[in-house]
Length: 471
Ligand SMILES: *Cc1c(COP(=O)(O)O)cnc(C)c1O
Image (cartoon, rainbow, N blue to C red; front, top):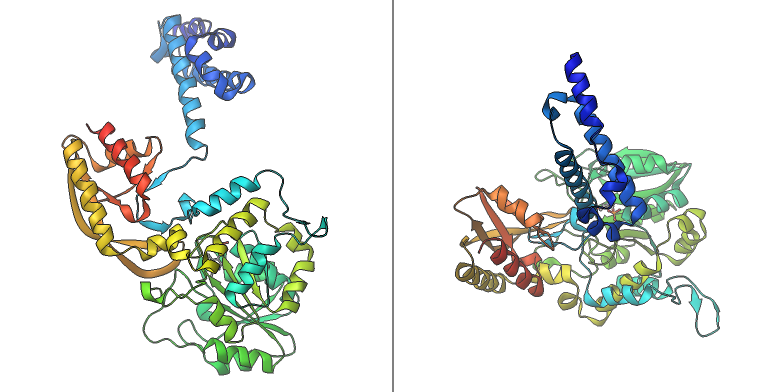
């Protein structure tokens, strides 16, 4: 900058409002209770600093600006900073994407019973206290018993997530030894869970057998030696090889493992606790079937197809589960009382036989096309009457998500939204900034709403939001 610009910038800088003055303006005083005075002071300091940098960096832009202009500018920056803080805080959203287990949106939505259980468990609870004897009890015992019962397992242990469960099982049983796995199962799931990396971290040695598309029982057998501790089977979840493929049955692998005195462990990923074949999810291994086939330990996620809170469920032989519970890593991976409470309620629905009507993820998977079409038509008609949107219905598909059943496309009826004076992206952005935010998808420059993932009461809310935004 030249000399006159520099002196100009200096004089503008000296007109910047003081933090004290800013905090006393009406606009900032209104915002202060939500953040507290300490945080608000810090925000104001940050924003005045950035305004100061802008003036120094681009003096011509600010030349001759009045103190009032700078004050307004500072207030605006502070308001925007507060808004960003509010927007990044976790809040309820309406998932209109039709992706049932949407990892970015918190995977499985919990049942009403699970929500209530979490709410009740938020205070003091008997999570690790035996009410009969009045002394310490086994932590989360009822949830574990339910998990074991449902899967037909001798015992169960619960940890933070599916990845933790896999890591724990490998660490407890295979550290320092070899784990035999098919090359077709050395997969990456969702970007941050890679089977070979988890194996390496656990201190187990990977012994790959077969090829990416075909692995035979003999391949496994030839690889078993002195150092072998385990045969590992991993459900490839979001990855499929179709065509010329072969893999031995779980039962034959289990027999092989036991013949050689090694453990067989299966990471089924999503884990269907009940058979979901009638909804097209026949490729998802059913946990109880794996155990019946002779698998010693099975692990799966609590917040995928099960429809519960984030957790990793380990089921299998009693002696092995006991060893897991005694390992120091188990203590480090243990779940919170809120998770036990939600899981207990979710598993309880399966146990009562009401999961398909009670657990939202299952309810969404099992929703009929006729029912969805009727809901979409009603929703569309009400919007045509009440809003300025161009509304149509069209056939489409919903997806399971969460890495489960990638080829399953559930037929649905979509509601498409358009405006005459805006793009689909502009509608999407408005929906995202509504209260609660609505997440939808765009195709061919129209916004698509899939009511499969929108509960009845949320659909009423969504209708109100759309009518308000596009009268
Ligand atoms: C999803 C998945 C995991 C990881 O489970 P998280 O609960 O997400 O930690 C591990 N293995 C398989 C096969 C999976 O599909």
